[in-house]
Image 1: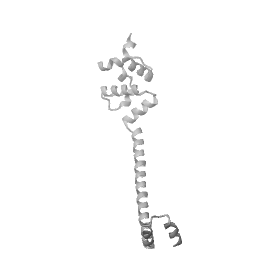
Image 2: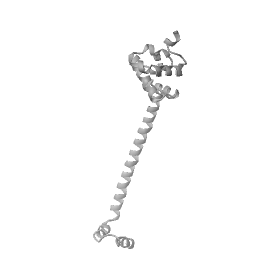
Image 3: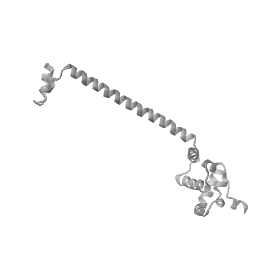
Image 4: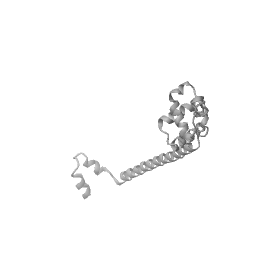
Length: 144
């Protein structure tokens, strides 16, 4: 009771009766309610953690077990910049390849002679890409 009076000395006069009315059962009820909220918060943190772990595993699996993931990995391994990646994606769409990784094993897809007029402005960049990936010149240069 002495500690209550010392503590109450720093409170406004209208708060003192509220502290005096609190009984032990009310404090136990507050502690129980706090425990329930702590358990709810812990459960929420657990659910979020499980979702993040499962999502990370699925993303990792996608990176290694999909055609787009393989293409992305091959671009990264070959050190291609974003402009080269965009150009290769355009070539994939032009040829309607379901497996874009084929660009890295079949040089015929990057031959400027096999591409449409929309690639004429990037013919030099395509030839450079083809040379760097396969060490092969375009078919037009090989015949001359």
